[in-house]
Length: 225
Image (cartoon, rainbow, N blue to C red; front, top):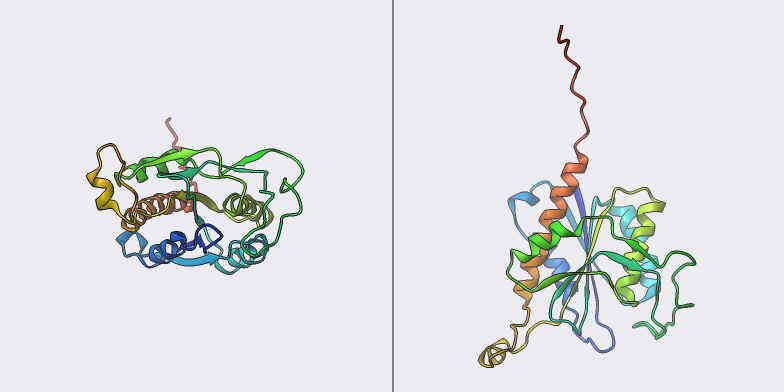
């Protein structure tokens, strides 16, 4: 059985409503034949560095996920963004709990690390939902990026066969009909759009996990004499 962990974040200053928590829970309950043998769990992180450091190792240890799908809010974009790398950077301002990070870099060393999944199939799957989406090389410097970095740490430290992906989502549409009356204004993403994108990406990740779970079986050599 494939184990999947889906995460979102709670509210933070400037974003009293974060759609990613509800999205994670909906995807954990969504019905699809391909999820028949998939065990799914959802978790909503408090937007704090200490919460990520405390909760993520426990979640990985408890669920042993082959797939980790993470969502975060990017309030200034109108497109969903599939992140391709984590940056070795932290913002100087405090998190939602009021705590400031101890430094601008997460650890001494490399400036960034790639996410452990080919993002192109995820992009193709998400684009099939006919919703604006693109690849991104900049996950920011706040908790979303920090979670990406710590997920990569967990993958190394616990030798977990994690297929990990992070998707930034925009603020949801609140008046799409008004926007539709004005020519030249792009349609805003709705909660239904987010669930469609998330489901397609999740199905792609689960399929990748299944392929990795199939052992390589060598064919017996035939005697051609």
